[in-house]
Amino acid sequence: MDLRSDTEQTEREIGMPLKLRNHILDNMDLLVKNTNYNPLVAECVRLGLLSPIMRKSIEDLNGERLNLSEDDVLLQQHRNLFVKITKRGPTAYGLLLQALRSQGCMQAVQILENTNQRPNEQPFISIASMHNNRNSTDIVDTTTLPVPVAVPPIVVEGPCVSKEKVHYNDVTGPVTPCEDPVEGQTRVVLKSDRIHENSALGVYTMQSKHNRGVLLMVNIIDFPDTTKRRNGAEIDSDSLKHIFREMGFKIFAYENVNQDEFFDMLRKVTSSPYVRSTECFVMVLMTHGERVGEVDKVEFCDGSVADVIGIKNHFRADSSPYLVHKPKVLIFPFCRGRKSDLGQPLPMIETDGVQYSNVPTLSDMLVSYASTAGNQSHRDPDNGSWYIQKFCDTMANHAHNTHVEDILKITHTAVGNMRAQGGSLQTGTYDNIGFNKKLYFNPGFYLEPKE
Figure (cartoon, helix red, strand yellow):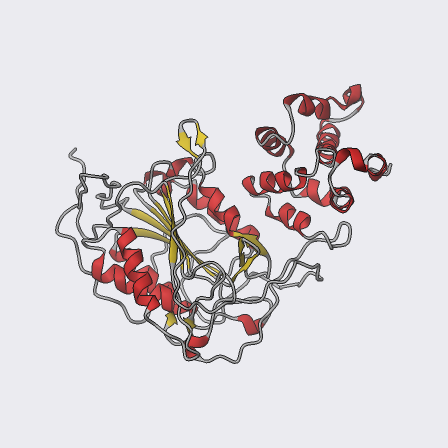
């Protein structure tokens, strides 16, 4: 049966562009394979893409359920879901993408975003390489990202592995803190003499000796295009490990993960006992980045691309319940475009959360970027990235008595005073998303509850 016949006859009535409807129908098998029916249909109802009555109609199968096995019933319902969505108007495609991202179905998102791929071809979206002849601090963590086009899948034998030995967690193994020693130069970290307070705004609790914080560090160094290797990135990993160990954090460090591994690892770490009992959560994602339109994107070691918003949405109250009301700091030290920053800072963006069981879907979160929207960040192959190195300097010198927003401001000021050989500079920015208390790291000082 040609699933397109019904939709083609009612194009004017339905409103979804014919190309997009056909793309869904032509890739039905891949979409079914890369999604789970029950959570997806529930999310579609929640977003208003479907009504409860429409869901009942999808699942009824016109009385044919008695003649089908349970697996066949689920398969037919799954297919009916996508057919129904093609008839839900001009905004349905975007709502479907939103539903898929919220469920972490990034392979399905890639299928839908790549409307030029051939039917049932496994999607592979790659950031094209930018030909640079820069040296030292002129290296930028960006590449050109054109409108996505389909390219043949690249076969990589075995997992992505860096050419240099650095200590990282095994993405396929159990969730356990990284205990390996830090290599290279370390900083002297000033320690606190008390637990800091703020009577006007209040502070996030940061006083436990054993559950002070969790650092999730992901460093993408190698890519299918070997010319895009992020030389010097290993230095940033060791610097971050040392600083956050001095802060009393448990560290989970991963290198060269693909997109599926990243989101799977993110779910495992944020649902682990370590995060359940922690007072604070910090994530640093180091890779190539680009901005397409108004959308920030990042690249993984297999060349696949994900929207940054999909990563941030993982920290919604319904996705990460162990982090509700806890401070979350996300650091993205990658480029957000190709323009050189001339020192005009963008205003801080405030985002209001939407209520979810009396808890904003996104709250208590700072998202820090190494550059403003559309601009580059810089990395030195001998000394690491400007942003991470200055951030670590600032943490070592000021975390003992300075709250995190001021730490970011000091970092951004220091980075803004640096210039590459070509004369360009770099301006950091951050988003405050319901981060309404002060966060002091209080390194070296603890107040454990009395037994």
